[in-house]
Amino acid sequence: MALTLDKTNIQTGLTIEALQVSQSVDAFTGAQNYDITIGNSTDPALSGSLKITGSLHLSGSYNKFDMGPAIASTGYVVQIDDATNTISKASIASGTKGAQGVSGDKGAAGPIGTQGADGAGGSVGAKGDLGPQGSPGSQGASGQKGDDGSTGTQGTIGNTGPQGNAGPAGAQGETGAGGSKGDIGTQGETGAGTQGATGGLGPTGPQGAIGNTGPTGPTGPQGVIGTKGADGTVGAKGDKGEIGVTGPQGGQGDKGDTGSAGAKGDKGEIGTQGADGEKGQKGQEGVGTQGATGGDGEKGQKGELGVKGDNGEKGQKGEVGADSTVAGPQGTIGTKGDNGPAGSAGAKGDLGPQGTIGTTGTQGTDGDKGAEGSGGGSGNVYNTQTRYLVNSDGDNYQLYATATSNMYVGSWARVSTTLTITYAAHGLAIGDKVVIRNTNQDYLVANVSAVTTNTFSVTCVDTGATSGAEAVYGTLFGADVTQNAGDVTAVVVSAPGGLNGASQLNTLSLFAGNQESGLAVTLPAGFQEGAGGYTDKQDINIASADAKAFSGTGQSGALSPTLTYNLGANFNRIDVSGIDNFSPVNISLRF
Image (cartoon, rainbow, N blue to C red; front, side, top):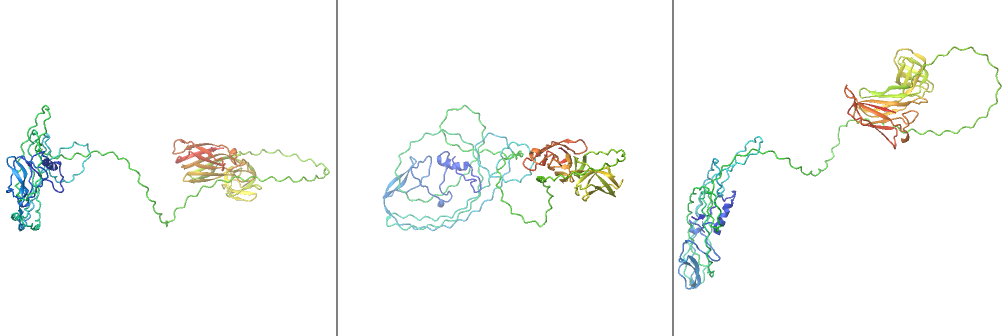
């Protein structure tokens, strides 16, 4: 039984499958047997026409139609030979052309057919056993999308389940009947008169609504591929016939019912491969049942992190913000600058001329011998080296020094807590630091609080003697310290004041409560009062350094301080690094 072209599921919005296109190719190439109807099978008035260029070969049965007798006039007619099943042209004599017949009245337009109801979607069938692979089936209609399920926990990737059966497509509604075409007028006899004017074309009737696509019947099993028949000889090409008069269009035949699909046979065993036979005609396409749709697999593991993309282009500079109306906090006080180098000594004045030697006076008479004096006592001797607290700020820092100094003797007097030392032209100033011995306090380190040309005062305890003739004092080094909450960044040592100074700085010892930075130590330049030179790089006195971490109450920790000297300027500055421990530290410098 021949197949027919089927447009099932060829609709707007649906997916066109390869088999829906290939059926046309198979029909017109002879790969499969198809019945092809040209025109409308139910209404001859809506039929079309067939124009062929070249030869037409008929195989099988055909319905011939009466072309009428040959007309004795110049021209051709189509001739059908029942014996040979061929169509050919035959010459006719040319007669006189008859007058144009009157055009028939146009028929009324037929009503538009109602659209068929949508077919219900089929339920998903149970998963069947996996059978042998059948021929590709026709594409089923897409099922409705189910609600999104909640996301489950991530597990291993499961196997892909078999695809479920697609539900059957809804039935196609009947095509609405088109309007009937008016009757064709009877053809007049061919006469010798002039041709009449062509009648006007009647308006086309409205197109009926397209009904729903009916269900596709199951395809029968694929037939056995037959042997290819021998190619017939090609007949001689006949002369091209004249175009005959168009006859009335035949009515379109009713579409036959689709046959039921045959039962699928068991898969046979694979036999030995025979010799290649000639290619037979393509059999009918089989339809295998589609398995049920498998459930969704578990969510796969998270993929690896993708490669980092290129950096985006730099954004444009933002606009300058408006000036703040609130005053910012006051900045910290800057570190004290280094002491300037000592000025050079003035040039020595010229030696004045020697005075004339005076005349020698006459020798006086010898005086009387004095009385023998009493035995003298032995005076006290005091240590010229002093170890003392130079400066401090509670737990933030404490700076100690060891220095040597000349010791001077003068009288003293005390009123309450004010101790006054008398020494001619002492040269001290308020704020200078001194060490005092042998007064109401045997050992006192204090800052000068008041001065006159020949006296200076300090604060003492209000106990003990109130005066004496042999007070001993020496001058000491002072220092300014720059720090922030125990982070000491600079120590500037100042030389002692006073007359005929000769003090020497031997050591510095600094406890810092939270050392986070390096330390700059500036010393007095010079040999008379200082730590040994530091006026140029040749007389820099290389110091030694040690440092320990002093956190907690256990044992100290090791640090490795490094000293750096300036060789082009500021020769009296030493930079100490390797002590930024962010903890309490103790640093010692020896000169």
